[in-house]
Amino acid sequence: MSSASAIASDTPVLRVAQLVPRTEAEGPGRRFAVWVQGCPLRCPGCCNPEMFAMGRGTVMTAEALAARVLATPGIEGLSVLGGEPFAQAGPVAELCERVRAGGLSAMVFSGYTLAELRAQGRPDVERLLATLDLLVDGRYEQDLPESKRRWIGSSNQVMHFLTPRYSPEDPTFTAPNTAEVHLVEGRVVINGWPALADRLRP
Image 1 (cartoon, rainbow, N blue to C red):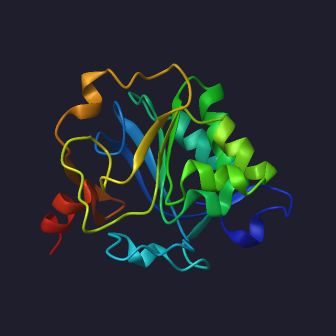
Image 2 (cartoon, helix red, strand yellow):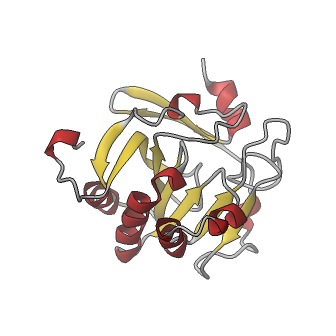
């Protein structure tokens, strides 16, 4: 991972909280999942409250992270979660553009609704939206757990199919939700459907 002092000031960088190089619990197919650090929304009951603080995490360049994703064999795409990916819209857009140029799909989970994002009128937000195949949007509502749609935490959230790469008619999207346990760089990481993931945590 890159150190902040060694990165040029004009290089797109992300603050990264967590990486899982291969998962089937964060989108269709086997995916490389990136959790970014920092979230201004701070939904009650969020399963990643340690990712709220904006100044924490590991600083990585979008270029280096994209190269790592593209070098991972047997994956279908990239999923970016958080934290809040649109709080780092420019660097995440750079990452997703590089990954899609390499033939993989790009998916983002955001606490903002698509309407809220478009209303911001920010070029970096529009750039990120333009490079996504899938967007899951909306605040996480702990009292509205989703039980029928896969990869969605609460029933108010919406899966947006932004390109023809995936179809909402694909039964993959209504299969049972899952959670996973990984050992990543000597650390146990539990990810996936929030209700099940919480039960797996000590």
